[in-house]
Image (cartoon, rainbow, N blue to C red):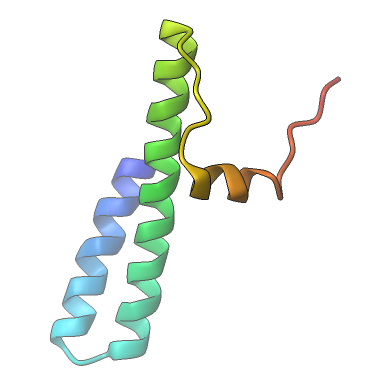
Length: 73
């Protein structure tokens, strides 16, 4: 899902930037970068869970994930 949204938002951002809609294109580009960040974090977490070779990971995504802690039930 993140890959699909990322590709669509990159495409829309490029189209809007070409048509000189700078603000809309910039916002769409930022959204695409956010979803790309989530996609990379998901890939990293899957590799970590599969191999059991967990490391500290990416500092940026670790910083973002501190704002959304996982609730233990």
